[in-house]
Length: 422
Ligand SMILES: *[C@@H]1O[C@H](CO)[C@@H](O)[C@H](O)[C@H]1NC(C)=O
Ligand SMILES: *[C@@H]1O[C@H](CO)[C@@H](O)[C@H](O)[C@H]1NC(C)=O
Ligand SMILES: *[C@@H]1O[C@H](CO)[C@@H](O)[C@H](O)[C@H]1NC(C)=O
Ligand SMILES: *[C@@H]1O[C@H](CO)[C@@H](O)[C@H](O)[C@H]1NC(C)=O
Ligand SMILES: *[C@@H]1O[C@H](CO)[C@@H](O)[C@H](O)[C@H]1NC(C)=O
Figure 1 (cartoon, rainbow, N blue to C red):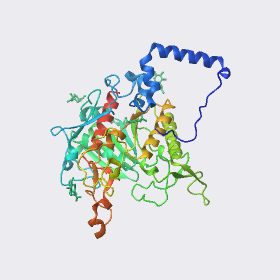
Figure 2 (cartoon, protein in one colour):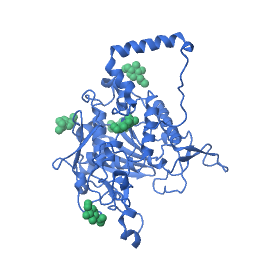
Figure 3 (cartoon, helix red, strand yellow):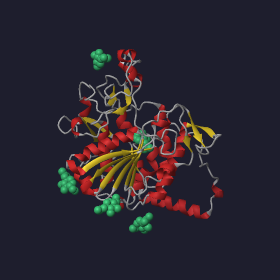
């Protein structure tokens, strides 16, 4: 994995300069390491890229019995994100597209002409254990009198809608409703006095792309230190699921606003994208530390959702993309673009230095095998397609978003597993 550029704070300290208390601390760590050899190798070895990461457990390992919502444990040492896709014609999909009225027309692939539904019949099988079955009743009972909030971009909105689709079947027709107002969409389960909400904030921080409907701006700009702009609206949530990634991907560098959006002369600096992203991660952690009670609430962060824009990355047609793909990538080492790797490095670095308890949903690798699961051309189009486009479907295929039902239901099965069996 490429080391993240700049801002390295740790450099070697000459031994004689170490103060005595630090020596004592180091000696103690060594002692404990020997005593509990295995546990520590797992904690310290988490960024060895040859091993599968245990990052998602570092914050939860110590007191897993004390974590809010936990009712059990995943088999010891099982990394649920490390596994394989297995065909399951019987139990998948978990619901049908026509059954769930909440799916936005950008994700209803069958309605928009997808000719087959092969992508719906895959189940994620971790190598070391089995995932618990998603239990909608348990989820709703646990949310009684509570609020679950998804914050991020359209990919997180997809996961949010998948969650609603997984839950809504057990709620009677007249006891549920969904409403959208500005950046916030609220689904209410009346009998449970529970809400499941989505808040549009593609960068988490304040940006010029914050309008939930009209956000296609030519030059993206994010304001430094502005997490409370949106964060004030997230307070009081019992479970939060964050994501942010794709909107940062405009090139090697990213523009950051230092002052305010109202300044007549804007003070703008350009940072390497990794550094801009790191700034957002740190802001998020600070916000969580300040606003979320670790004894009563849970916070999740979903890693980058991979796109499949270039078939050449998986050895396909140089002109192709996810269009007309109906099979999975079988190469287990497959990862895709380099920017994903370096952003994953930033996430790993920032989270490992922090003690803020966030459960990491590392869905990037398992999703990167799923070139078959994108909406491709089978979605509602924003504008009328030109004859040139129609003649060449590859040119307008959406290889970013995912059909529902589909891959994102698995993300929620993993969320379910980590929420109740950390
Ligand atoms: C689902 O959870 C509910 C509530 O905890 C429980 O009563 C039920 O037995 C569970 N269903 C399954 C299939 O495990
Ligand atoms: C419903 O839940 C909210 C918190 O989300 C709580 O303040 C309120 O008292 C609850 N109402 C009832 C009737 O339980
Ligand atoms: C969480 O619980 C522990 C033990 O019950 C307590 O010592 C600690 O102060 C609590 N933390 C907060 C933020 O309430
Ligand atoms: C789709 O792929 C199949 C093979 O997988 C190929 O035979 C077919 O021509 C392709 N269709 C289009 C429209 O590209
Ligand atoms: C996420 O999982 C992938 C594949 O298992 C691994 O390479 C990567 O290091 C993990 N990322 C983090 C931050 O744990």
